Amino acid sequence: MSEPNSVPWWRDAVIYQVYPRSFADGDGDGMGDLPGITARLPHLAALGVDAVWLSPVYPSPQKDAGYDVADYRGIEAMFGTLDDFGRLSERAHELGLRVVMDLVPNHTSADHAWFRAALAAGPGSPERARYLFRAGDGDAPPNSWRSVFGGPAWTRVEDGSWYLHLFDSSQPDLDWTNPEVVAEFEDVLRFWLDRGVDGFRIDVAHGLVKAEGLPEWDHDQALLNGSAATGERPPMWDQEGVHEVYRGWRRVLDAYPGDRMLVAEAWVTPPERLARYLRSDEMHQAFNFDYLRAPWRATELRAVITSTLAAHETVGAPATWVLSNHDVVRHASRLGYPAGQEPTSGVGPDDPQPDAELGLRRARAATTFMLALPGGAYVYQGEELGLPEVTTLPAEVRQDPSFARTNGEDTGRDGCRVPIPWEGGEPSYGFGPGPASWLPQPELWGRLSVAAQTGVTGSTLELYRTLIALRRELHLGRGTLRWDEIDGGDVLAYTSADVLVVANLGPDPVAVPAGATLLVASGDLDAGRVPTDTAAWFRLP
Ligand code: GLC
Image (cartoon, rainbow, N blue to C red; front, top):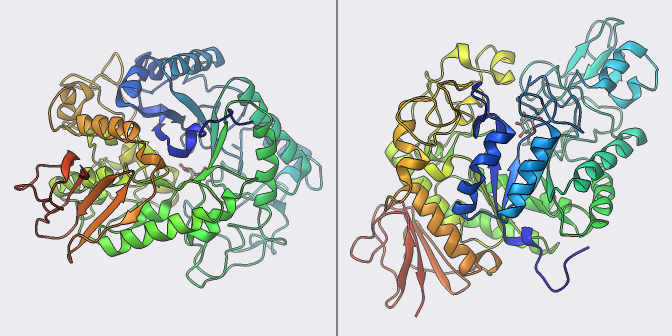
């Protein structure tokens, strides 16, 4: 049910991702928690975002930082209680912020009651039929599929059978052809909808249904990528059956008032495949990872934006734009590499290091450019402070399962998950009442804290505040993009909602049309011209 005569909030929302382990620690144990988040919600209201998406806070052994859920209807004790969640949600709504939960339906934790029952019940039981248990091929696993985190995707249990896990062995995949699984998750959705949540981010949305018979796949599984280099679709990703699941979920959401929404984490290309998740009876939004992965070059970015908008238009869904999240190298560091060599994952102490100054300059320009694009936008906690990836974490503090499963070959994702700085000159920089934080914070955090940047002209935090406020005031998220030709160089320019947006990715400053007045820029202009690695918004005469 939509509110009458209104544009649903999510169509042009800026949604802020809170990574609960690392946002704010209320009790001083070094781990973020719900009371910590609630106390810091005014920061998000001041930033001007529309909604908060919480990465998983369910009971979990935290083998994959909460993406291993042991109980979908509760709150992990380390994060608080259901009452704490109620208080968070109430406070968020008071401040005008919506709340989006993270739902992890591809797999449960091995500690989930269902998986324990499956192990206890043995081969052929209905308990095992909720997961993907199979007989091996002699002593070998049932097929050669690989885990996204490295190593085989199968683990053998005592009685000799194997279970599938596309991620860590502590994350057994569910069998989505089993109606009991379907019914359970619809019920979980209702559990949280009844508690007032405004939407769900759907983890690995392209993975739930596997090709019948789990056929061999000899090509590179290309990690999470739904489309192989060969042009064939891997049997574990983007299968037709997932869409039936989302049609069911849409029916569940549509029975609730207030524009509840679903956003897909689906690593599929090309955008026409992604748009299939956004048909009018499926999800509302999907993350645009093609955009996140595009190199810092005008031609590629323009091509991604154009194909994104075209594909979304065919289904009437808004595009989304995103530059950082808890799985990829923060864009203030990613963009600190030469164009075309930006790493999305795994930068460690032994790898070539980013140029921090260049990275931040480009990141500010990239965000300025992004926040005027029509559709929804996603912001990852700490990017509003210009936080870089922490590339120097020592091996002994790393917790990402992909680090252990690859013997350290994959550095993992801990570098973008370091607890964020709020104030003060020493650890934990206001993250919690004490000095502790579950990953060590670099010294630089003192200068980048919220307090250090608040009210400081030109700070990244004030840039974000200005951009988000203007975006709202000028309804930029609801605009229609028209490309402009400004210069023959490496320049991107478009007009949307009567605002001219220019990003200069080339070496020389570019001039803008006479009479255009500056609204906001990611850096200082050069005698009215937009310098290299800078983006700006102008009002047209
Ligand atoms: C998604 C999450 C990631 C997690 C994985 C398995 O990609 O974003 O953090 O490790 O799914 O649940």
